[in-house]
Image (tube, rainbow, N blue to C red; front, side, top):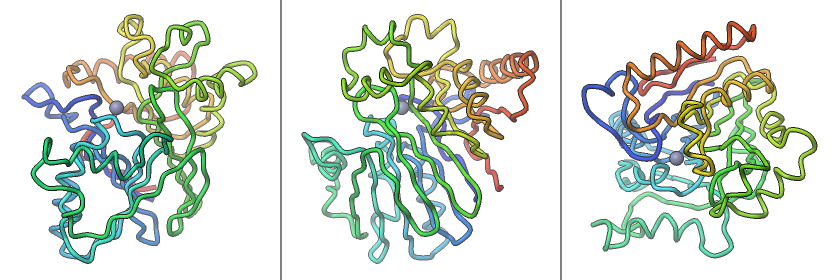
Length: 298
Ligand SMILES: [Zn+2]
């Protein structure tokens, strides 16, 4: 399996000299399994660069875009994804199901003529939609599992297992505390119930989902200090990302969904702080903060 980060920033793109090393695009990760199956995790602004790269290769594109949830930072790049404009290409968009609106409508609505010059039905590629609950299915050689995360609306994480390798992608997920989540107003009651009905640590369902993964990509938007003012915003601090990696016994953790105003130097400081915490805890996994352009093959 191999991956490449095309966007690692949360919430809104950022640019400027303070952000060049980690990058400013919103979430998008390219994943290939050994049989050539192309999976794209989220369609944030990073997908524009991926689309340019795929178009430059000059081959027809068959891809599945796995959307965690349709908040802007996870879908706003799709209208700029070049392969969607090319006849013969086949794109399947996968994302969480809602009862009030279809996944197709959600993607189409950000391209109505109020917001965008080209409408979804004008795209030349074949575009299919597949909405998911907590599911388990195959794409090529990859087994895909989804699980609801603790984030406003319906948000899933993805686990990909293929060729004996595994990757877990949890872009937006808040540490669950029954006490703190009493204040939550934008969260789905049925999903809060899933966490609340877990015996012991309510986050255990997340640890189980990521158990033994080779690579875990997890929300680490905040520092623990910042998080105190952001409870129920749907995001984690880096100490919780470390905790998920530890409890799930993963081999490698990437901190992800970086706070938009977090400079490169501030990111370095967080990576350094995580190394200290891991040293004290005698953690065996590798931890880094995801950087745009980083690639990994395993
Ligand atoms: Zn997000």
